[in-house]
Length: 243
Image (tube, rainbow, N blue to C red):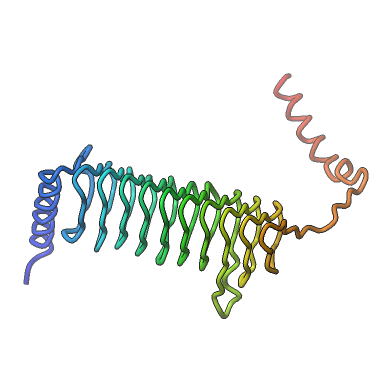
């Protein structure tokens, strides 16, 4: 039985051979601070930046820039896409995508041409047609999304009720306002809007605006009284600093 050291040296040798193979095949590396499984396929002309881990049946097509600090596992990345400081599992990313930074692409995600999944976006079992923009702080799970949709910050697909998973369907050219909750199963039609801050639990027809907000009520002087002690405390600190 091989010792732990022997296993380590064998793994190190396999990595060195894999790295050299890709280097000779025209893959650009900024440094050798990467890990690549032997099964991984990388096209000539791709660039792998430091800190990347490429595992399993991962395929990276020509013109891609992967990293820095990116993990890809059983994921295909289409031509000329970038995946920056993100983790992707068992997914297929289309050409000319911009993924990251800090994106979590979970199992079953598929993206078309020119999709952008930005900072702190998480996806799972979601199918995005071409041209979608999901810039930040959003969760899209168990969803089918038409082409050229825009998702405002804080959008959430509410796909799980504790027992079952349900699907959200969004049509082409839809605009999902900031802090929208989409309570599945639900459909947002083609060319439809959801107003910022809405919880959408019923279908929004094509071309419609879905709004669900409670009526705002302002209570006079409530904030002034509530904050009085806090303001006095901070004013004393300000005076002490000036003194």
